[in-house]
Image 1 (cartoon, rainbow over the protein chains, first blue to last red):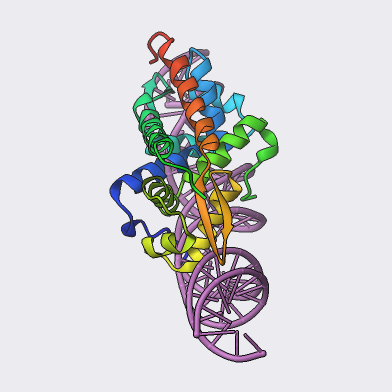
Image 2 (tube, rainbow over the protein chains, first blue to last red):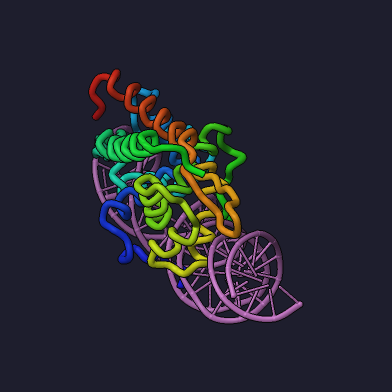
Length: 109
Length: 109
DNA sequence: TTTTTATATCGTAATATTGCAATATATAAA
DNA sequence: TTTATATATTGCAATATTACGATATAAAAA
């Protein structure tokens, strides 16, 4: 034991959990915050902005990228990362969906 | 090392990360799904619904509760859990905020 | 009171995440 | 070519998460 039993859950549940998990670290929230407020998106700038070592930031960027929350483009010998809105929209839709179902219900407990 | 360096980030970033992290497991998504579609919210029903052992479900419920995503009320010798919309709303607001800032920008990369 | 039912907690094994120094890779500049 | 710059990968230690059997707790039923 110790590993998440993903095979017990639906594709949708796993996908949402993967998205949320990628957001589940303050460094990765900080990266998204930074990318959303700044015009450039060069990796080095993100490394300078964050209080973590370059390999650590690189790892967080990789996780955001794997989750589909950001995408990177090669730009000379630098890499430009930007937010991919589609993934965020999925999370947003889910939350909105849950909220709506909840608000339609009579009182609970 | 190995622990998240929460002290390096803002309160808001840490809070959002905590919320997202709580959503970051398919079992916890499944619990919210279930709570949002069903009228009852007795813990035992959640345990029966999920393909995990009772202590495991109890632990996931505890995490959702710690994150403020659900609240539990004692009901006889059972416990009734329901979704707390406020926390979900926070995540939603954040995502909407990021999305808006992104869409106001000129092209990236 | 004894037993049953419902939930939480403890203890622990398996696995995953976080963070970084050292190093690799690959493009740009000299 | 050599050197500098930018980013990724590797390896590893510290820590956290996941899962569950065993057990505790506490209310309900018998």
